Image 1 (cartoon, protein in one colour):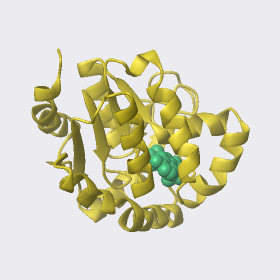
Image 2 (tube, rainbow, N blue to C red; image 1 turned 180 degrees about the vertical axis):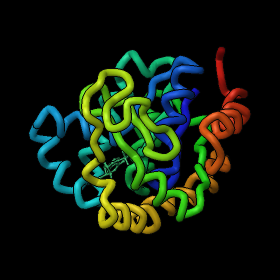
Image 3 (tube, helix red, strand yellow; image 1 turned 45 degrees about the horizontal axis):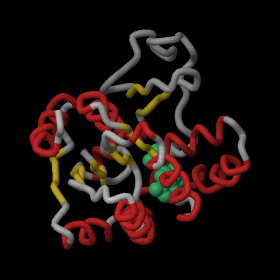
Image 4 (cartoon, rainbow, N blue to C red; image 1 turned 120 degrees about the horizontal axis):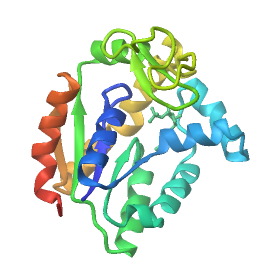
Length: 218
Ligand code: AMP
């Protein structure tokens, strides 16, 4: 199964990508996660990317395309993959199409996550994550049982540096301007499906499962 999750920041793509990857035994490839890892490791790429990420801007296409190309070449993605947060621009989508064509692995589906704007802002501003084990929480919808500390490892939870009100505003604007055109791009290729992503994590997973199960080899 080879799928792309498309949607504004905060619609729950990452949470669902984890579950879909586990359910169908495919790789989750998240450019946001890969970039945050590079930032944590203070690599040259990480230092360059951080400047864009903290402001809510997109990291240059060439950087993220390189990251995804490398990941797709790894054996871990041979059984399939879910791309979370990539592509985010038309040039990224075109580059992805080329890479997949070269290896004769065309996409099966692109799933658009639908959530009203006010819910997105609420989801993003309440998000917390563990800097040590990367577990994610939400102060309202999925709080840690240990309050400000991580349920899993006890580390103090932090807010992502791009989940501030200013960066959230920019990220939503960037989505409308640069990523939303991909909806039409993939619809014209007859690859697009939409799911209502404003329900509970379980309800959204059910909806995704019905869309994706036909493409599963399991
Ligand atoms: P995310 O975790 O998907 O919300 O991504 C966090 C940040 O990483 C974004 O706001 C961008 O700065 C950067 N980023 C992630 N994926 C991409 C991408 N495909 N293209 C450009 N920048 C990206």
